[in-house]
Length: 244
Image (cartoon, rainbow, N blue to C red; front, side):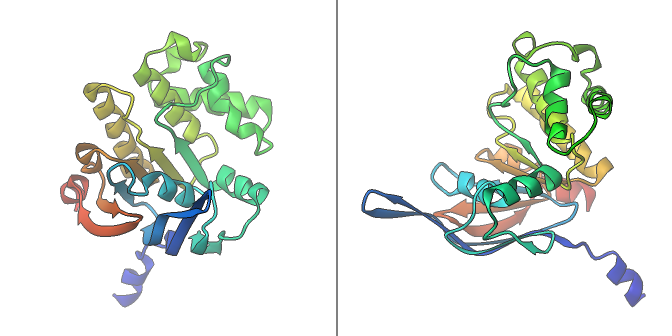
């Protein structure tokens, strides 16, 4: 029995230990993070929630390997990334993390298919493989009939679904969603959250969602509340209760 229990233990995929990020503005030091500690296991759905100025964006940069801390340590899949160069961080991001942004960040001159295929270029995937995978992902998010449309020819909800498909391009271990419903109406936003939840349940993806919206945060298994650059409380979300 003991061995069976141990085999089900989930591995830690991201861990921040006493992470500080201090910005210098003129002669003044402004701490955005003040000793942030957080541990995320494989297959978890975690929301980082807090008001403006709480350190959410900086936390996302740290968790997503977009920046390195002033002090403290960050581990991704057991590897200390705290002092990596930008090129090393870019490589690890490309393989391990898929990003979904509030502003969608789609390239306006490219079609949906080309936008989704783009991240695969940097992983030395052949053009044929890129296009096949991109079409497969657009079908997955219900946009198989929009593959040749440019962002300006799609609604906000459709653009966000293209962004979700793009985040899955390299089959990353972690999906990092930054205010994924911020530019959407409530109905469309709910459908995006439903899709992320389904990805978590059916594909076993680790989802980390940054939001200021308590309703959106409730969709997660676990909610980490940020204030003044550190975690001040942890609670279970509705998704945890539903699938416990």
